[in-house]
Length: 516
Image (cartoon, rainbow, N blue to C red):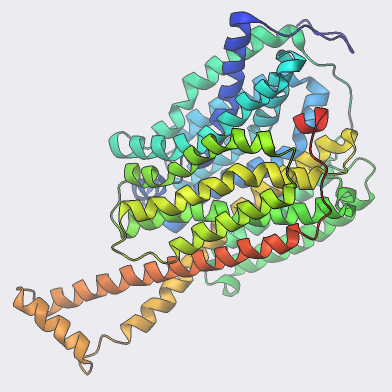
């Protein structure tokens, strides 16, 4: 394969070649982002088809997120060792193969295993597509390249719920993965054909295999503990206890290794920067409550309110539409406004969205469901650009790849942990509310006897009447649990505003820093 000699600058692409290649590269980002959200609204369908509960089905989401998060720190080494073009194309092909395997999965265990593979091989897809898009556009059109890339990352969360819902309701759920096969083959073929002569220089680089191994161990063990704990009575289960001990010991060993290794997989010294430390915490917790709610709402709508996957997707999609519309305006003014104010707008919008959800009833209308997602769209348009600006303030250009790798790893991993914690919290609060509501179902209380008499007049037997009342209690308990989780998320979002204002005022991004 021909490669560009080190230091050689190839001219940008033009005309049809530029358009076709940019489209193929954008598809790489789109597929990865799509697969992060497409299964959310399909979860009840997948779980039912595979004969497992919806909370067990969350493994389909968390396994992909954890594997993808752990793979992100390895991306820089892969691109330096094998070249950006080769790494990106191989990643797309492996992702396509993993998608096919997910589509033919025959059990929850096999699907989770293939989702882990899919997440692990997809690490280089987003950073690779971004880097290659920038390289093929003229320098004065870099903003256009980043705009193309940004739009694909925002359209993914819109298309994911809609496409996932439509496929689940009208076809077999496996097609949410199988549709990646022709798209992935097209993306890899066009990208390699157009860019094989523009390969970046390669060099032998040391890799922190021990650090990466310890990272996989403690993150994986912690995720297993969070996913299994709610079904196995937490620390009364030997599996959960072993997972917790493994996570703690693995984390301590990883921390010591990364602080002392000459070439760490994750450069923890970056956390000496106040903006990077506080910005990363705010970024992770903000993304965690966002991701957790994005997963929880479709679950509640489908399991308790009788929504189909398509209608659940239609409820979720408007937030992405708002973000697509507002993001260009936010990007234009981001260099003129203190990023901390933009972050404040994001967290206030998140808090308002979650508070509106905490006021839902079991008779909530479609429009009242959509309003909070529209407010959430405002948050999405300012959240990422503002927090990344805060995080990367003062980071030297040569350390930006390491900083962005840590940021993405922490964000993705926080999202996967949040998925487990939110569903666990929802189940626990439902159990609490159900036990309290059930205290009122006694023949000695007038409301219960009146309800039973009314049902009897409608022709229901005593057993049927009790079943109707029990179903109402369960529905109200899940609603109250959902309201509780939403309220907690709102307070977490508001608390992040104080954290943001503890950082220094960041300088507006420009030049290479903005591109990174």
